[in-house]
Image (tube, rainbow, N blue to C red; front, top):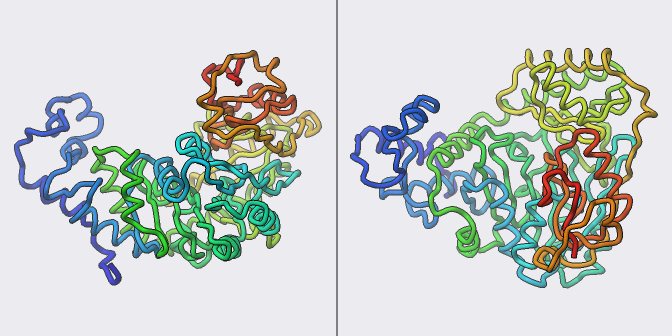
Length: 481
């Protein structure tokens, strides 16, 4: 709906209208405007409980929108420069699922970087598509995976001309961007769809000073976490479509996995957040960038820490960098990122996004304040003074290339047995092992378990990383074929 009024929030307006009507509810939810759950109403507030409504004629239906939800999706598409948009209430995981399942089926090949979120490989377990991994570049000093080299993408396409799609992170958790537009052009020249995991790039569409967004680069589908940098409620997300994609087909795919009881609290938050970004996004993210630049400068003056930024850009595997990302390498202070994550939470009441073996990420966005950043900088300075160790005490791990022996679906559903982790070398995993966040697998179903992987899992556990994915919550054993 070109030319829509971005000042409007159709879902919010409809909710407010229904709320004013004081309708007597003989439908779900069963708390009946909060009266049936007084303790929950006291916790969340009467307004929240009254707006927790079910689909009804004035409020439209998320599975088959024809009125206010449809209008909100049209406004969202226009705001993000997409041909169509879908409001998602099962998190960006459901957007990733729908994106991949819309263009691949069992046996189809899909090219993707190994540092994908677990939701990508989970989708391959569900639909049986076959991964073709491109090992991302790596920065040995920082111990982080980078983007995909254009030459590596070209080689993967040449070796797998039957592949249906290629998936790209834009950006990675650390703010690293591949050469998105060049990859899109290359893939389209070989009749491959381009899917973009833009979980951490919702803001890219709203400032010319940020990396290129998926839709601006000509991608076919993009999964966007509005709740991360866009200001909406947790679990609310978007799926964006380019002009070559049939949105009616995508809607059918979405309805395979997304709830039929869409939360109007989540939908309203998407509606209002889109309006806010459309009207004020440029100034908002220019301010966020300025705050991140300030914090980087202050942290780098402390010593030993390295808050990295656009100086990493090399025109290829680091084609661009998201300047709103405040990622800090901690190895110079002799501390694992996971140690800093725990210390800064337990001793300074500061909750950062994650800590891995060598880095932390403080997620900056729409609601941050300069005084909070000053508190973060001060805490990092004190931690260095109190806990600094010799860097040589920390071993470093290079990126471990996966050895794919079976498809994720074949391995996940195969007959399996549990082995102690230390005895599993040479076997094939049927489950994931990943540090969460960021949720990037160390090991995925169908991959060979090597001694290097076992050592990395053990070291991650010792350094306080939160490991998930295995049936054994302690990750002392692992299921193998």
